[in-house]
Length: 302
Ligand code: FES
Image (tube, rainbow, N blue to C red; front, side, top):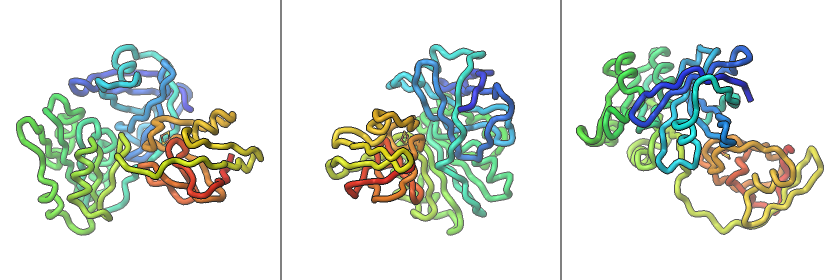
């Protein structure tokens, strides 16, 4: 973790504040557009936030936090209790949503889903690509950075306030794209589902804040062989692999516990994982908060 000091808390929409976190011990770890960090809050909760500042700024990170009315304690704490001057620990950035090279980009953002897109749009423009942002929200007052983005990127940014403008026509947007274009989408589940229905799977990259609703076979117990320690950990049908490992004394970090952030990644040495995450685990890796095993044993690098 990296020590930072909360330097600025600033409203950027009706229910959203931006936080600027300055490195307390020199330059912060580098990051690329699409990356996020785990922020350890003083109330013992850890939450994931996309970085929405400038990757060239190694002195500070910027994130934005929407006050979720159904908050489990994270965003509520940020909005009600967090004050400037507080020391906060922040993880090294991770990127589950990297910007791949392309001659043309269409960015689709819904509400707070704009946060990873801010730096992606800037990077695409800087690279000389054709880039368009379609930014959707209830009203402009609820859409973080809408004015800032329009001021910087002009008519590359199309803002749809659904109360007045209705929703954008994704099918028409898809028809207007070149085959080489890439589409990056971050927003509520309904928007991600609409994007999946409209755009070709090889063009579309999405980032979920919440896991997709899916059905899995009933969970079965399995055994984890921790190859470095030589210990064996049994995972019961009713518990997660992450909980079983934590209970056995392994300090596997976690954040979302829903398979969307990547904090709990583990290297798999042998056996067949059953991936239940929404990130798409790279070969030889798994996310232990939700994923399980298809084989009766898994060997992991712990
Ligand atoms: S804790 Fe977020 S993916 Fe496992």
